[in-house]
Image (tube, rainbow, N blue to C red; front, side, top):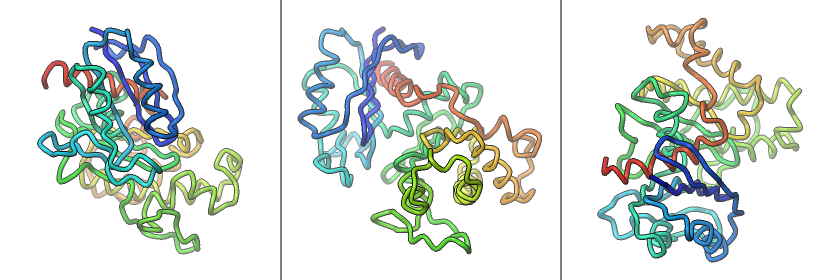
Length: 293
């Protein structure tokens, strides 16, 4: 089988062709500009590829309810020009094949549980920390949905007593994304994260906020694997700092061997699929839809 995959992001669309085994044969990156320009290039890329199904993992918010009149839409996004855009509908016009659709982070979580760092378990959460913060989850083998889809990047956290930064989220100011996403780092410190690699205080504060969120997710969802991706996580010293602080925050309350100082390295991990987690996740969505699961 030949599947098409789209990782639709606010900065770029990554499109690829792959198989039901998670293999990516080829891919291309297309800048996210206007819907007309971007989707024109996306559709042209897939023409003539003879795909059997398509998977789309998209930035959001998006409508995932199949009985809704706006199913497949990007809804109330602050991304200019993309609000209330029928993403699935535009693809379906050109490619009348099964289309799996979910958030980009839910897709990445599904990809990791199919072929990546979580393939040995039936539940995981995938957190990306970059221009925003998004979190997806697979629970008991099923993607997590509800009233809408999870927006775990916007949870409220305890402010560090020495942090006077007001927060960068246009909706909540000092929610998790507003305090710990890439733009918040740059706005707080006056430099991009990549320029602050040697500044210990930057990453101590980052770990302070991200570990709070992860501890909460562990207490609420009880995932069997926690996977951390995105541009900010390329700071290699950050994940060990987060692990230590998660153990400190949980304070021995949860009694499981995975969440101990000598086992947590295998529990809070980097993506097994590397930078292809989102694209492989879109392949997994295509496979799921094609098989009718």
